[in-house]
Length: 247
Image (cartoon, rainbow, N blue to C red; front, side, top):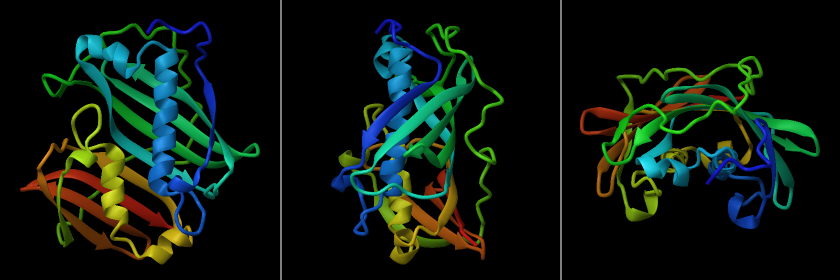
């Protein structure tokens, strides 16, 4: 698609929270929160002419590499949330994108995301083939108090579950969708921590892609302040998640 005449370098989009996106207490699931953030990022790339369909002309797609989310509160069923997004940096094969979620004008969630351009045939990173100079960049306007980081995986981690990647786990890029990794790990968190909204922030590192029928092991390690999950295929780490608990 060409660049939309309505294109702006900062995009705001409204979403109504429906019942399928909520936990039994009526609040938005963390996984669906990440989906709304990603859908807003996708909407911005569409009006800016660097969407998945645009990039597929060159066998390219954006894939998520790192993500940090800071949570003050979660929206609930029937809330209308506004998700705002802009780009901090965009150069060659890498981009850092900021996202914020608001309810009634109050910011409740901030996220910093790191994206890479991925060749979907060669299955490797490469430079973006499309023009992007029309995007104004906002390197100083950060959505989170802290930036994303490399998660340290405890070598003494405990194996908690073995998982096979099914068709339902895959996305349009033909690998396990980034939100699926989060879902697999959160399934092994004590439900009361989720229902009581005890997560202050979380970070995700996406290290290697997973494909249909891959068998992986989910590991967990805990400290007083956080819980870290990692997912491995054989002896290779594919994903890491750190949940930081409210004090």
